[in-house]
Image 1: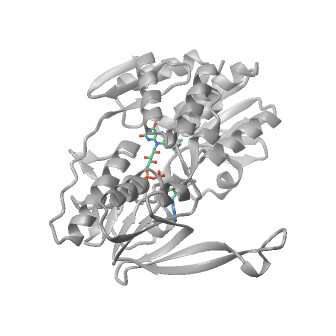
Image 2: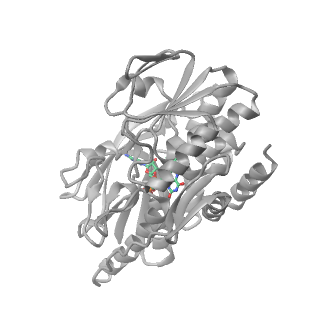
Image 3: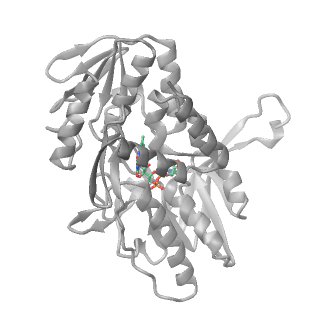
Length: 392
Ligand SMILES: Cc1cc2nc3c(=O)[nH]c(=O)nc-3n(C[C@H](O)[C@H](O)[C@H](O)COP(=O)(O)OP(=O)(O)OC[C@H]3O[C@@H](n4cnc5c(N)ncnc54)[C@H](O)[C@@H]3O)c2cc1C
């Protein structure tokens, strides 16, 4: 029987696994993830300002897979050998000799497993650009656990300012949500976005940048461009051009990179470590890459990181693996871009959907409709809608 290993149970990995199970082919499907939960990342910023409970954005991976007869292993992949078709991962198991005691010991092990087909869907993670001080001191927003940590820190402390590292989509969303949080909690917190480039929102159209800057000004959110956070010492933050801020909380959303095992792989990558793939999303005949880990050519450029692409690529990869098993030619990936939205917490969002420029409430509404549609589990959908509607 063919063994298919999928690294990562995020948007791309889960779509691939669930599509494979629908083919009903006699294959062994093993999904590996370093976390036990699937987290709905696009709504994480909304947990800060809109009263969305992070618990409704998270669900356990194992039951989702088990229901379809698929295997789940909790483990962190540390290396892959494409020639020997083998992956190496670190697992943590409860020591059975002490399992009956109150605190059974967890034993760390390095395990190896072979594959016939490999799908790398390990997404991306926060990039600290080798700044260990920022890594240790700043908060990140990569998971529902991160959101819980930020919310409890906000509850337990009274900060004079919030400093957001990074003026991309996520930085803007986080800043506007923190303004909502400070208004709801009657705090006069200064909010600053620190962006290294000479403008926010990188390659997006000029009108969106201007519209967003106007809205940030409306919310009294300052933007420092051509600036960087240099050091964090307790709650004191050192920003370039000798700016020093006391009693500040730093949230770092200044960029992403792929997992370490990908960075160490000998293959062609972009600067974020995304793997360049062929038109069938492959590195070779047995190894497929989907989602943020894949660097896919699109028109004159490359596809951005987004859940719509990760999910579509996961589905196509499932189809192509089954075709390969049946000895059929693969189908090439044709990306369809539905558009994008920059959701801002005061409902002055903007975006471009199906080629149409949108501003204000309609894109906010669309953002939430897409999120409700894609959230896993009826409990999560209802909980999220209740939180959103009842929040003041
Ligand atoms: C705060 C935030 C907001 C976002 N908002 C939007 C939005 O509004 N719209 C949009 O389209 N996109 C948004 N994105 C981007 C979107 O979430 C990603 O493009 C999408 O999740 C990519 O899917 P993926 O399957 O490639 O990776 P992911 O969904 O990130 O899944 C990767 C999985 O791999 C696992 N993994 C990683 N390394 C290893 C390893 N070594 N071993 C085992 N497992 C591993 C991870 O634990 C994770 O579960 C947002 C991202 C963030 C962080």
